[in-house]
Structures are given as structure tokens and as C-alpha cells.
Length: 555
Image 1: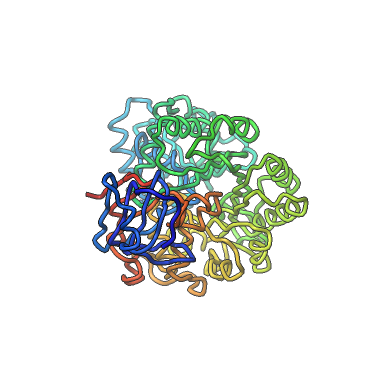
Image 2 (image 1 turned 90 degrees about the horizontal axis):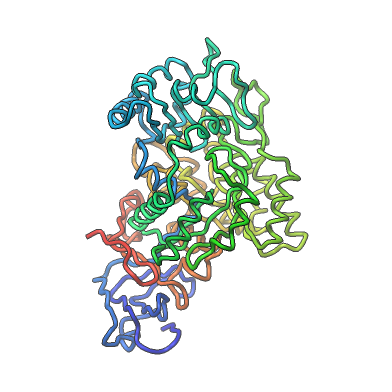
């Protein structure tokens, strides 16, 4: 038995199949909790002496119990906002299905009220890049202004009224780091706005759709209810705003933030339209740090998305009419600017999450971190987010430099996003998406994220199954995506527990069930090690506990 302290436990979990994700003890039968922390792990007999008259006992009846899941990359406030205040539809929806959803939603809105929603599939880019598609959107919306986000949340599709309000017409030049997609025959704006071009409409929509402080708190609270239902007890918001940070701190101050939340303060924003960025956001870090809210990272978008040709690559994209045969894409900032941000924030004790969709962006980050490490900054944590394409020579540098691979969203099996990538990158590159086996074998820390609401749910078991099988958990797509990059089930569980906690600076707080750590755990309906690999995605959480208190029950 491993134990800390003396006295009766507040909670005793017993008669369980406990999977601790603790390298010193992978299995146990029981554990005890006092003051929200685990104080002992062992057999039921060994822990029986910690049961007092006031001890709550959870008899798991043999159920599988494991640490709370950790999501190292989501946009919780956007997901909560969408659920409560916006139109939502599946990223697999067809053009006609999207119009049907808009038409039904428009019937509930006033004559000139904005319709804001998500997420259309990136695979529809070509279909939507024509004025005729926009006119269909106009009809469905009854002439209302419409702003719809794609599944990457980097690109927008808008109606004619939205273009009019934003002052966008055939003569409007493309903004920096953005593209106004034009109809190939008429040259007029099609309604598709790539990357920073979407901010032109976001800015005019903002006054009409902005949430007040109470609504921001509702959005965060609702998102946390949802992640609890999937067993998630810690997460990192991958690109947060000042209003969203204030909402988290307000919840924390009231004792209503029942999750460990690490915030990534947005440095450069080409998709969300945040008012405060970079230093203006960092200036509020100290006042908005709470017991459970830790704004310890910055977030840099170093490139965009490959389907929009905004990812930065070492080798050129597949030839296209718009970009020719030798287009590599570009980063959002030069190497010296990236290095400047990492140096200045490292001096303040701030870590960094950096979005990289292309291998050239990945290399730029590794080069910058190598310089920062050589200058003596060993403490900051660095994460390369997404990193689905990595040059083979750069794989060992993750471990050498202490850079974590934030693998998100669920790109390691066939699906809508992999299909879209196949239209712009060579087939052999797409087959090797997310080289997770190679990263782990090289000693890199691989941490799992959902990128929810880019993924439709934050269900980590879909990701875990995909990591193990490299096949589509839904069964909708056949085949596998680079089976040589599959990892084992124990490794995949670590990716979504202790690895994620470590990557976001919470490795001493949560991610495994061992004495001294927060009593964050889940009770599952099945033992993952006793089911077929293709059934892992269907595992359900029966109960979720945070700091020893139940925060979700399926009953």
C-alpha cells in the first residue's frame, strides 16, 4: 500500500478495477481520498483502516476506474457558446443539409438578425467558392446576414448581406494573411473567406452577437458540463480571449470551476476577432490566475490549414490553378519575430502552444526553441499543436528540446479532414499523418487533444481507438491511415491522461491516481482492456469525480 498522512478518509473507492496510470503501480483495488487529494492506493483490505464514521464509500462493484481524462487542446468557450447561442450542424452535412439547417434557424430570427453557426466541412470549399452557392444561402436565410465557420474554424462562409455590411465587393483587396475567394467566372466574392479575411465580417457581426459577462460564464460552465460527461477533468483552452479568461476566473472565485483549466493567451488572431491580443492579454495574467484556472501559456498561430493553402510546407503543394506548381505556403510571422515572442515570454515564466499544420512551420518552432533552450530557458513548456506533417529529420528534436506534440484534432484515421488534406498534399504524406509511433519511439511526449468543437465532441475514446487502430471509429470510412504509426492501448491512455497533464504543467497535480495528486477519476461502463479495439469508441463514462466530488453521473 502507498499512503500519505494519517486519519480517516473523506472518500473510499473500493471493490474496483483501478487502472492508476502510475508506472509504479498500474493496477489496484481501492484508493482513499482526503481533502480532495488521493492519500492511499492499494487493496481493499489494506485501506480498510482509513474508513471512519463519516467516510463516504463508493463500492464500484468491480467497475473499471481510471484517472480523469485530460484534453490538451480544445476551445471550450466557443463550444459552449455554440451549443447555447448559435446554429450548429454536422461537419459531414451536405450543401443542401446546411441550407435546410439555416432555413429552419432563420424562421426563429428577426428580419435582419445575424445567423452565426458551424461547422461546414472543409471538403465543401470548392462547392461554396461560387456565387451561386452564396445565393442559395441568401434564400435559405431570408436575406439575413449569415456567418458560418468551417470544421477547422479558420475559414468562413457568409451571405450577401454579411458581405454588404462588411463592405466587401469585387474591388475589395485580400487582407493580410487572408483570401476573399472569388467566383471563377464573375470575379465577385463567392462568400468564402479564408483565414484573416473572415475577420472582416467578424468585426461587423461582433456588436450584434457579443456575449455579456453572464453569458460568457454560462458558455464556459456548459462546456465544462459537457466535458465532464466524457470524463474530462482537465483541459487546455488552446486560444483564449480576455472575456473568456474573466469568465473562468469568476467561476473559480465562486467555487464553480470543477476542472483544471490551463489557458493559452492568444498572441496573433486571424480567425476569432479577439479585441485584446499578445501583451494586452498577458497583462491580465496575474489577476486572472485562480486555484483551478492557470493562464500559463501563450498561443501563436504560425500558419493556417493545408486545405486553404495556408499551411507552411518544406515541399510544395500539389499543383493547382490558384497557386501553380511551386507553392509552399507561408508562416504568419518571420523566424525572428517568433523567437522574440518565445524569449520575452520565457523570461516571464510563460510557456507556449504553437499551431503548426505544415512541416516548415514545425521546423521554425524547433529552431526557435533550440535557441531559447541554449540561452538557458529550460523551464518553459513548449507544445507544437497539430503537427500532422513533420519532416523525418525533425522527429528526434521533439525529445531533444523538450517539445511536446499536441496531437489534435483526431487526424490519425480516415475522415473528413484527411480527405480534404488529400486534395492538396501528396498521398504518401497523408498516409503518414500524425507520426505518433515515431514520436513516442524517439522519446517525445505525445499529448492528446480534441480541438473541440473542430471535432464534433470531446470524446477521447474516439481518439484512443483511432490511435490504436488508425481506422475510423465510426466505421463510415474504410481502410487505415498509416498503420505503422499505430500505438498500444496503454500508450494511448497515457496520451489522454498523464501525458496531457505533463504537457500543460499539471503533471504533479493530476493525470494519474497516486498519493498526493488530485482525486480526479472516472468510472467506466467497461474495461477498455477487455473489449475489442474497434469497440473502444463506444465506452461510456458512468461517473466523473473532480477533487473527490462527483461532477457527472449518467444515471
